[in-house]
Every structure is written in structure tokens, then in C-alpha cells.
Length: 207
Ligand SMILES: N[C@@H](CCC(=O)N[C@@H](CS)C(=O)NCC(=O)O)C(=O)O
Image (cartoon, rainbow, N blue to C red; front, top):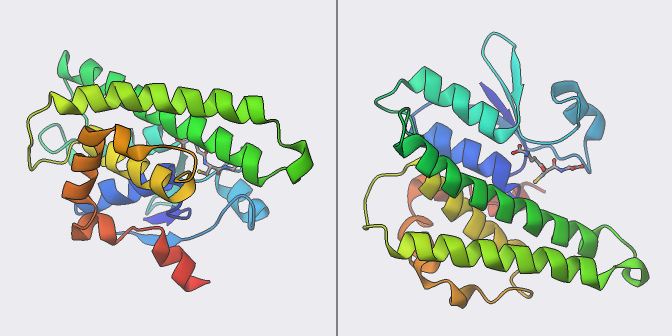
């Protein structure tokens, strides 16, 4: 399998960590829509990362659709998202907030980095950051009630990846110490090999 995308993308990275957790080997091409749009369009008509090229050449895109396929291949006992209700919908709720925070963080960041400085619309940045903060507060309350475990379900993988992304991409705009349960979860996992092997620094060092 070949994973297309850079690890600064939390969507790409959650797929990479999941592949590692499931013990599924993969190669990676660290492309982005900004530097390699034509190549990214060849694997995703919308021109976004991640995409996963399967061994038979079929291409999957959208991180949730890719992860759904990996869970199907892994089977119900190893799947990272519970296959049965009510656990499944409970975890999908958490993932919806986690992905919403990623989307809103990306929107705030794009507004700040893609526009000329005099065209940045600060109310739109603030709007998105407000949504990031309220999503983080909800997730922090959730994880403060969750018993510490050594398992790595998709909810934990995506939350740790999302937390790292915010610390790298929006550290000057968010007060991450307001979310102690998320900080504790991140500290517990971020140095584990399975996360370190996909740290965004890996791509920076390749440049
Ligand atoms: N919902 C998508 C989001 C993917 C996404 O937004 N990827 C970003 C990188 S973090 C991208 O390729 N952006 C380029 C663009 O939107 O032009 C997923 O879960 O895969």
C-alpha cells in the first residue's frame, strides 16, 4: 500500500498511525496539494490528501473512508472503531468533534497563511478559533472521565494526532494548557514509537 500525504496533515497522520497500530506495512509519498497538486489530483479528484493506493491499484481517499476500509480488513476483533452499537455511535460522536476541530483549525490556519497579510479577515480567524476552543473543551471533558487505558482506539489515535497538530500549527493562537486531560493523553502517547514514526518533523527533515 502507498499512503499519499504529509504528516503535518492530521488527516494523513491518523491514517499512518492506524496502519502502524494494525501492523499493516505501507510506503509513503509526502505530497501536498500546495506543492504537487497535479499528482494529488491523480489520486483524489478533489486534490486533497490523504489518499491510499491499495496493492491492486485501487485508490481510496477521505481519511474516514480509508480508516473504514482498514477496519474491514482488520476484522471486528481488531477494528479501531467498534463494529457494534452502541459503542460505535459513541466513538463516532467523539470522532465527529475531533474532525470538526481539525477542520476548523485548518480553516483558521489557511486564512492566516494563504492570504496576503492585509487581506486576512480577523473575525473569520476568531470565529474558527472559537469553534476549535469549544470542541477542545468538549473533548477535554470527555477524556477527563475516560479511564486511562493502554489500548489505542481510533478516538485516541485521532485525538493525539489532532492535539499535536494544534501545538505545531496554532500554538501562538490557542491556550493548550486549558485542556489538561487532552494534554495528559497526548503526553502518554506522543513519544511512543507508533506516533514518533509519523511525526511531522520527518517530512521537514526530508526537505
Ligand atoms: N475530510 C478530509 C480532509 C482532507 C484535507 O483537508 N486535507 C488537506 C491537508 S490537511 C488538504 O489536502 N488541503 C488542500 C486543499 O484543501 O486544497 C479527510 O478527512 O481526508
